Image 1 (spheres, rainbow, N blue to C red):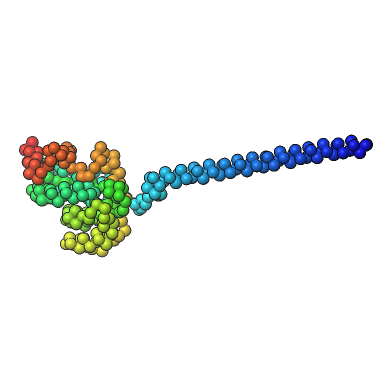
Image 2 (image 1 turned 45 degrees about the vertical axis):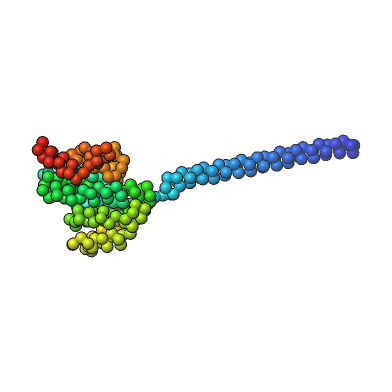
Length: 260
């Protein structure tokens, strides 16, 4: 074989080898780019999920733990109603409220005397449904902790007195003072016979936290969206700003229901 042919064949082999090396190099770069794109896509999806979590409340929200324990004497579907007054009363006042809600405090402090008067006469009974809208809207645990403490007071037969005391001492809406269990226990000391070891354990352990959550969920299944929602014999009586409710009007409506 001549030197010229030998050099030609060797050059052809070298060119083929170089071409294969270039193709392999391109293949490696292509695989690297694909892998990088996959990583970016995964990271991007993760960031999107994180954004959704952040927008829905900054990650996992703490949920009340433990079994659902309804307070003593709770009634109604899922036992989320706390009754007050004589069962034989002809009129029923249904109240959905939040212990951190300023408007609820206005209702309670404005109508407490007439409601208590009518309950004592046996003309009116009340059904309380406790919700946690302010915790959900502003953050904190005051609505939940106060509701649990009120349920603990119900266990002790002191719901009405403690319920009224909470509203008399309600902090500003943005002040989560009821989130501090020490404050709830301090207030309990003003209700004769309530500040007992059993009550303190109930408050500290959040015995009724899951029940409070259930009560709030039941409110969400109604057509009502604000607190307080106040019904008399199933009819809303507190939402009409053009015809505001007064204690005298409430007393008159209860008297008319008793006649009918």
